[in-house]
Amino acid sequence: MTTTARAHTNIALVKYWGKRDAALMLPQTDSLSLTLDEFYTTTTVNFNQALNEDQFYLDGELVSANKAQKVVKFMDLVRQLSGRTEYAQITSVNNVPMAAGLASSASAFAALAGAAAKDAGLDLSLKDLSRLARRGSGSATRSVYGGLVEWHRGVDDATSFAEPVQEVPDFDIAMLAILVDTSQKKVSSRGGMQLVVETSPYYPAWREVVKRDMVAIKEAIANRDLPTIGHIAQENALRMHALNLAADPGFTYFDGQTILAMQTIDRLREEGLNCYYTMDAGPNVKVIFDPKDQDDLLNALTPLFGAERLVVAKPGPGIEFLTEPV
Ligand code: PMV
Image (cartoon, rainbow, N blue to C red):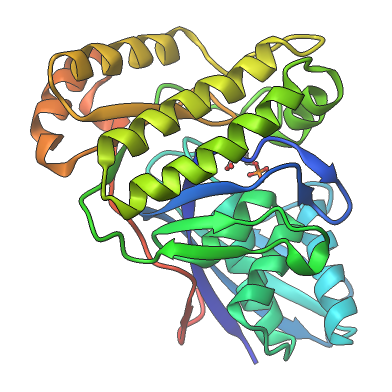
């Protein structure tokens, strides 16, 4: 049997930035994200008695055992949960506009969780699928669902899962990615978040910030209040990145182009456009905006960054199971 699943990536509006249990991937805080339509991973899994190790193909190429370690570890977990003993062939195709620009572990591990669990014969609810995806990558927990999604930090493995806030947002919201640098990130999210939890003096304040932001953003979502959603998301991102600057050793994911993009979005908002920025564990900037401002936004950003570096996305769907292998 083979099973194919597709999951879309998500961008957090209230960030997950720190684990409290690295083995179980339990987060320090809740978080909330928007799943996007443009960026997704499609993965086919096939357990096969003839194999003597897992074989992982990414975008048409066999990945070396060394680089496939996270995937193999995840497959070990699926074998342990399902009682299956065979190795598997795993084939993944990333649909992202430029190599590594927004390649996300979120869509990758959500699609892998879906395809592997189903192919192994596990009949998981979406909630349990979300818990399983969490073990591959924290942000993958949220990619099981479409639209606006909340990940509950929970108190243990059973209670740390994602839930939709609005699977199809009932107001207009879009996201524009400014791909300022598509090379591999220098500090992994895993390494970055561990360092801030251990050394950033602002970490206790961050936990309080997220508690307040989660309440406020859910209220703003219920009110269809895009300016407040955008404002909360932008401040939350800045505070996450302030943790990094204050770590020991301090570090940042920003480069010069990141700062240029941030200042430009602030200026365009002062000039009347409904736009706000957020950044993750890399220099690219994601702009939350009202789709009616799309032309004005693209006209202003194209001369600075180039049309090929600007990608617009809308809210995307949750995990899907496909009939054809990739
Ligand atoms: O779970 P990871 O390794 O993809 O970490 C995600 C961290 C951020 O993207 C910065 C924030 C988030 O909540 O997605």
